[in-house]
Image (cartoon, rainbow, N blue to C red; front, side, top):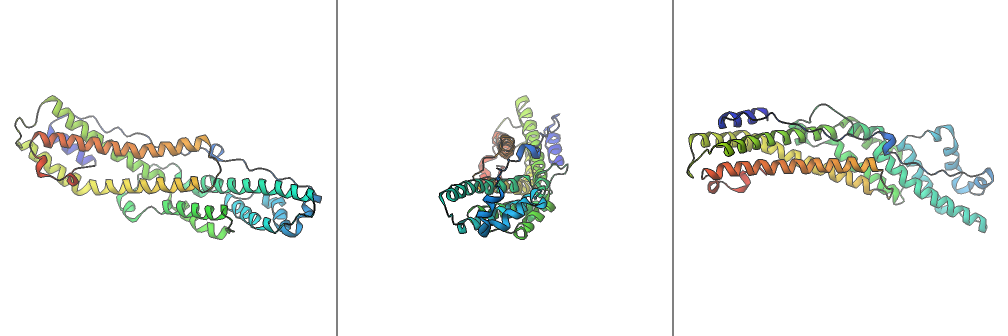
Amino acid sequence: MSDYAWRVSNVLAVDAEPPQRQPVPLYPRRRLRQLALPELRLSPGQALRFRFCLGRELGERNSILGQVMQPSIRFAYETRVAAALPDCEPESEADRRLLEQIRDTKARSLHIAGHNLLFTAEEVEAFFGATTEPVSPSDLRHGLTGTQALADLAALVRRGVQGDVVTSAELADALQRLRESRQAAGLMRTARLFQAYMDAVANAINLRLDTRAICLQPQPTRTARIAETVFDRFYVEQLQPNLAEVQRALARLDQAVLAALQATPAPPSNALMRYVHASQALHQDLVAASRRHAQAWQRLLGQCGRMPDRSDSDLPS
């Protein structure tokens, strides 16, 4: 990309400003993303009344291990509780009221545990966490495993919310792929890199055209022909396919995050939604930079009478 921007500036004989790369959104701290789980406190007598349907689950939750459950273990536990609750039969009006309270509390616990798994698990944090390296085009062509893993995890959470028992083993595969990926922030850095260089090229073209024309008549000059060659060989043949991969990868990431948000009815925190909106805005920033880049080339080529010879698909979009 730097070679492309340099060649355009050199051909047009302008001193263009260096590319200005904007920062990527930072995934918020866990305490700003995590939702508080409702507490279900039962006396020994109350727990005893439902020991036949919930005895194992209540005992597990009250153990020392249960109190420090990892998000995946907690969600799997909540799906087991939800599956066991229909088997509970109240023997009195007091039991019925207590059971309703338990069902209400555990329904909210299931939703929040699913949300916390999707957005606060260490593996998810590794995927969204800060990285200094952009994702390479070859990685993009093979697909980002973390994006698909997040979508798979959201599907598992949605299954659990709908009543299925989801085991920790089922969750482990998607979580491991997320941990190994660490690519969401790298993808965003790649997008910012493309945005910066496309804006730099657009600025160089507009600076030259605003200062002096390249073609006084709608006929290509030597400078126009060389500029068009740079456009064809460096942008159309090399960079445009990679840009398309970045845009597709961002779209898939947006879809996976949306699926995660919609997997449970739990309302996300304000900090998390600010991050999501900033990530979506980054994608739109790239689209806008691509449009500015296209318009600058259309302006240059149009001035030199070259636009009729070129289909819209050959121009950057």
